[in-house]
Image (cartoon, rainbow, N blue to C red):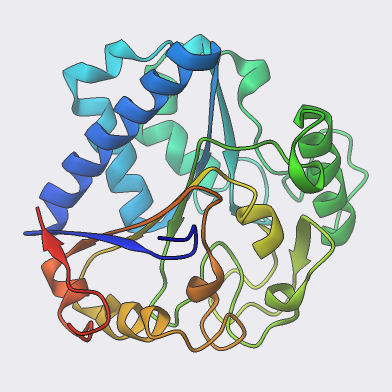
Length: 265
């Protein structure tokens, strides 16, 4: 099995999927901290990403994590004011982050349009470059592309197969050198965003793609059929050591069984 070969886990429903993914992520963080003293996770927004965080918050096992030795990053962000409820970081804080003892210096939010220094304003490309610099500062000497080797990078899969804020056919999905890009004219609101690129995503040790619901079934089936990342960005998201698709039955129902026979859980 190569790093790009997906492993599928299909759960009965979205609630069970969120609970199982939470347990899996807690275990992965604890294992990384036991091995190296710290762990790093890239969060995703959207309904599945937020459901995962809520499930962690509700889990007694969350206390096994040393929250002060966890670095948190984001795969993408809406380029809106810092307090805007549409921001992934604001939603993540409401679901989990404000309830656990994180080290504020290890919580790496993407810049907001009203950033404290006021230097970016409408210049989303400048904001993206600053986040790329922050990633580079955290990267170790052996890490690829000036990006930390994230233990787990979470991605929600959109109905159009987008991941992070990399949309089919958009310039960001074609980027091969930058690690972070500004996104303009996104097909879903808000139109201006910041996103990790596919090369940055592929620097992660493990990439977990989350999809639940009938509206995701077509996107999951398309991405797993190997159309290429320009047409289906989710197909270009994979980890260095593992690529894991966490699905519910509704999202998995259109996967061709001869391609990836799902193992139910």
